[in-house]
Amino acid sequence: MNADIVDLRSFYHTRLGRLAAHSIAMALVPVWPKLPDERLVGLGYCLPYLDRLGADAERVMAFMPASQGAINWPAHAASATALVMDDELPLPDASIDRVLMVHALEFSESPRETMRELWRILAPGGRLVIVAPNRRGVWARLEHTPFGNGRPYSKSQITELLRETNFTPGAFAEALFFPPSKSRAVLKFRSSFERSGRTFWPAFSGVNIVEAQKRLYQGLPVAARAARKVLVPALAPQGVPTTRNRP
Image 1 (cartoon, rainbow, N blue to C red):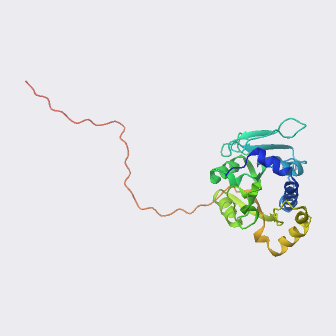
Image 2: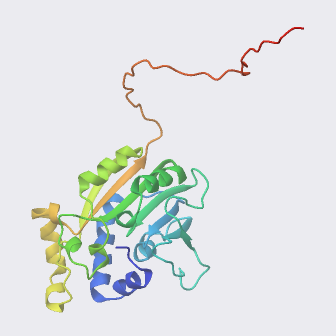
Image 3: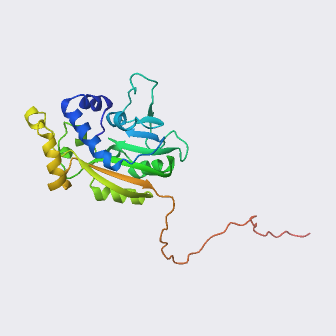
């Protein structure tokens, strides 16, 4: 099931949503190397993270998939939001330095086509950061948050997808170790859950965070093929000879 833009915005306005955004933003810091004057695109619903991470960027754009819907952003400046098809982004080749995907990969109808499109728009050496629900985590099993919708991914599945689409996986991180509870008593211990989870049960995080770099060249093994007959069209057809009766 796809996430709706209204539901996404409503979730991040709740206490649980704000704490989830803070935990993910803190986990992004170690895998977010500084790129001077970068051009940054957020694909999916990245607004809580673009506000934090895009302050030093030369340009920031928020691309929201058509199946999700879009809202205006930022609130008090010229809009930097676009409603897009995630496999046909309205950007020229090699025009973006970094892409952040949140609430995007798990809802993509064609993940490989989406990844190939991101490869196209990224500049040489460009970086991609994916935040996706962890299939082993509790957050992916409960539907009252956006992380419980769509297709969750294990870290190995994301890595395989990246390699298949000419990206080199780099740094990894995890977030959302605290339970997705609305109880204030439970959320009060969020920081303790996050610290303990990174140490004792990192495989059961709520989301996996993977950073990757665009790979420019790749050697692909070529399988041996049996010889086969090839039909070559003639330049001009040859008609069937006919006989004429002579008088």
